[in-house]
Image (cartoon, rainbow over all chains, first blue to last red; front, side):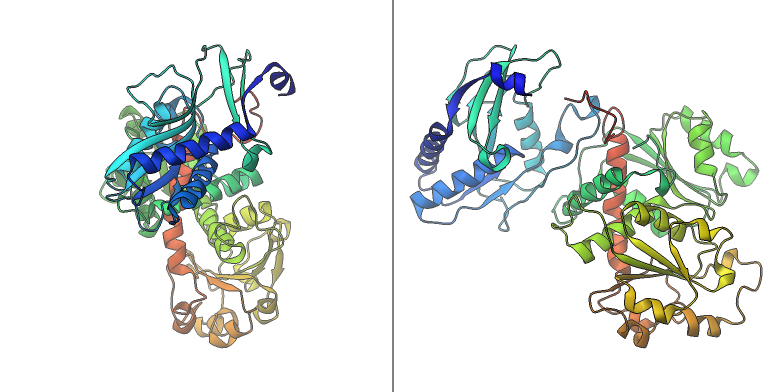
Length: 190
Length: 325
């Protein structure tokens, strides 16, 4: 772990991440014309913390409470059969539900797009939103499905031999986005 | 965790806590408008019940259906078993149909173990109660109910039952529920006391990891949970106690006895309850009795077990697997 960190390069630091989230919050308000029906759903683990931070920023801007929750996609993954079962994370849908609302999915890294496909399937079982949008901190490319993000913190062109690792204070003790070389044992992202 | 779930004694503490944590998330599916997950789509599970059971079979079936598995129900009555087919032939017939898991209940202790280890079938085997041996999913759902009530739903995540005092009262001799519970609760760090007349305790109980008492009244004030077991009349071929009334007076739980339990303590019953025998209606209908909750929790626990055994390309292993990801 330490060797990997020493070889990796920070592409976003704490203040950058804060600025990026502020910008995304403003973009959401602009595109949703006031954001009064927005529900933020973070994808565990780090998407949940990003969603909570975005909700706090949206509340500052709109002076209204913004519902925020989490959406675990483990049981909807398309590679479930290829790995041992993983521990489940919390799905927490705000009390008013998502029917007729604008759901903004929040994740840390957008890569193949398979996580987001699974999230769209999971949403289907929970309700019928008016629309679904996607906000990500980093878009690293290499999509394998026709999926795109509506709000992107940073477009980060990468090669498949690189890894992108997001660290957030809530989980890792500090805010940073690291770009590193892939280890022989694949440090899978997403 | 192994590919099969045969005995509660096979589970490590970490495996057991993983199952309880997974069940906590599964329980939330029950609150959704669409109570279904696509996780086991295309997998076939057979419920192979050689012994009568309503709640366990229905609970397994509900869990399997909520995970989108294809379910085949097999009951011995009216099947080829009543024509004299052996367990081996039945198992191989199922295997030939391409079954991924077998949930088995059998009157003979050890039948699920035989099925899992004999090489007759490749499917995962889940023990749903065998003779007087084991009933591991019952023990798991009981532990889940205790953790929810005594530790808390969210506070309980990742926790075991360290230091909790659990009293199990009644027919220990014929009870696979008691045996499974003692194994699992001991693994989870709880202190278990068995209370029963000497005639209803099995030979060798002194080697079990628990205390034994013949006196219910002195045990009640020191209990965080009291589990009442049914006296299994259908397995009794001798006189184990003089009369039902005497049993009920000495080992039954009524309102007066419940009042002697600590304020926070709960009363559990795996069902079916015989009101007036081991438990009075007053206790059975009180808020402190978790019998109905246990039924609901049973579905969540069985979903968790099915997911962890069948959900991936191999069962969830909590240790000895370091190269993962």
